[in-house]
Length: 272
Image (cartoon, rainbow, N blue to C red):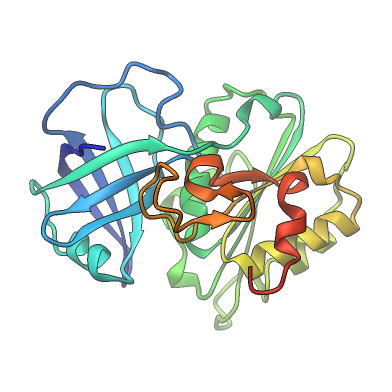
């Protein structure tokens, strides 16, 4: 429950209102547990005088205490974090929650489906796959954003396209945009999927995840092969405050990554 001090080593503006912080430990010792900070987990970032906010890990897993977080400015705490510069400090608690089931990837066709900021929690998965640690048979990344200039990690996307099958889509673009224009479910629906071998990791706005999951189910992918990250209302990260209770689950403790088979009934309840 006590934050450790971290120092900002580098700051990257992704696009207006969204930035990435690379952090190193300013106090304490590195965590030796190889499962700590696994892709899909999150940390609580504390801005002094403002409070703390849950932010997913968006960089490679490290045992030397280094962290990477991509943050969108949308509240008091994130605005305070945005004002911090290189060399300044913040507090970190974590990691918390359940990550992506990397152990299920081996020998499977992995569909990584991200919308907007949802690429951040999936970025560590891509790092793992590029290192070929999980042995996926085939990897396809479907990434949707509002505009071409509002895509995360644009330089890395170009690099990833050399070794993975990358499909990008934007809602609004001019004639210079070479990719698809429209929702990401359109190219997903047109894709050929071996439903007996495929596994899907989905993260993005909830409305986008709902429609992507509907598309996958229609194509015959089993509910047990679909995983999504439900990041909302998290406050304490330990299941004590109750802010993120969702049916019988606490998103911070039982998630944020869930198998769709286990939560589909809650997703179907209006306004829940």
